[in-house]
Image 1: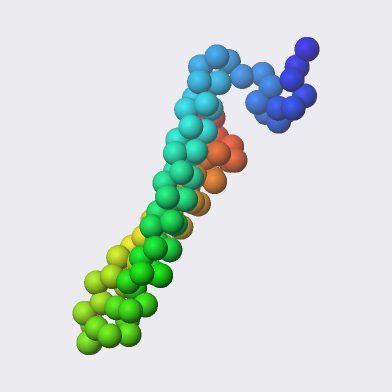
Image 2: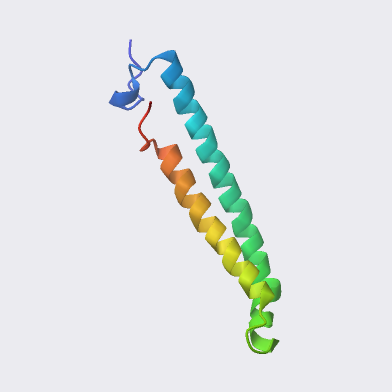
Length: 93
């Protein structure tokens, strides 16, 4: 009997396709873990250093703010890629 909890397009997969699907979902989960860890780091950078750096550093010399922007970019990219891969919207080979 078919597992009715699975989406219809995943009910009749070959073992190789199931392995590819599992590997893609594991990579998606890895990207989500990286996203949440970098989110914590970005929050700490913002609270501890970036706002003070913007307030007191002269001119364009704001290295902690730039690190914060890089961390937020990593969070956005890894979060969107991880969600995209975990959701199953990537076609199976």
